[in-house]
Image (cartoon, rainbow, N blue to C red; front, side, top):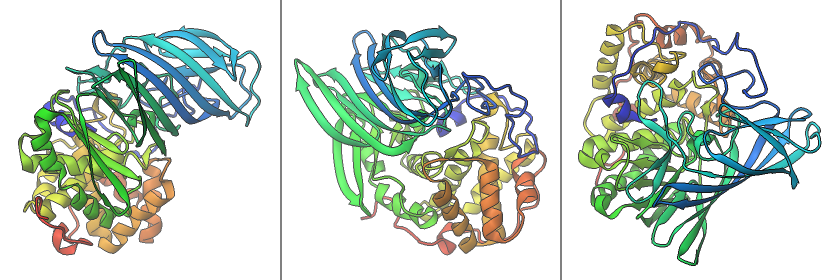
Length: 486
């Protein structure tokens, strides 16, 4: 998530719980919510169907911010459906069809209730097409106050969807528990570039406008969808272990951004030694010339960065490796609920520590000591199930990373690496919970680590740190080149 925004924001810390059990218990399930409902966003996600593909046709006018959408959602009913809900906020719905037949609709809050002409039997596939239009209105990221959703920029737009912004610009089952593949057809004025997740498969000019088509076949959570529109130049780099590398820069930030992004191959090789092969077929850095101050976000297959991120090369290096690490932790394996964000941020923060130790001359113990002091000073900041207002608090990042390091020094590097790779292999392309990770760690370590994780992730003073390997460089699977070296 937005690492530097978290550092800049004043976040109110919530008192955490020492329990690792899911916080969704006690919520009443209803058609307009996932089952069980998300502990922080009980109306995100919907029961009764599983989306397999989104085909999004988007036509954008930068002059007034108007967006016209034509979304075709392919899904399978998991129960007989006389009606179903989609998450959609603010946009005007112009027409809805289910399997080609007009459907009745009703809007209530952030829900679009759809009644197809005929009941959809369980286990049957169906398609719903929604034509909609309007000017997307941003929402606010809990605890941070920064906007999310479809955000207008100086010359176009960019999206920032974590945790609930996707529903501001397309109808969706807007919860990580329902991943799907995507196709984007983005129509913009000629001269602008439109980027999205995955691979560019087509570009067609017609009547002063250009349609850019992107295909993202790997399962993806709605919050990871990424659209960036503006004056951006696409630049292909040499593949890394078969992974296509494509960056996109605005002219005004190209020099600094390209210099920082030049370390991408080394970063990918370094993280792959710990986490296993890069999980997608393409990756790149997007650097528009405007955006939320401090923005750094891990859209699947592309990470987007605000211009100010590149102001300090050493700090930029750690931000870039943080977002790259999310491709494994957050994108390939996504959180089962929004009470599990430490599974994203704890591992991405620890990746920063490993990288800084191996390449920037910052001993990992320095970051460990700083995090330990911070956790000790604010022991009620847990890493898991913190409460909605603190879902991106320092406890999630720092205490989460500290728990990862404690695991590493407790079990040793070989077992630690096997735990990470087993977890990613078992849950890749889907979602996982804290309980899932604890289960894998206990299985590979050959002992029950439940109380270990409760003490490190829950509220209260952290235990004494176990002794063990303190250097990512000396004991890691690979020592990489210094940033900037060929």
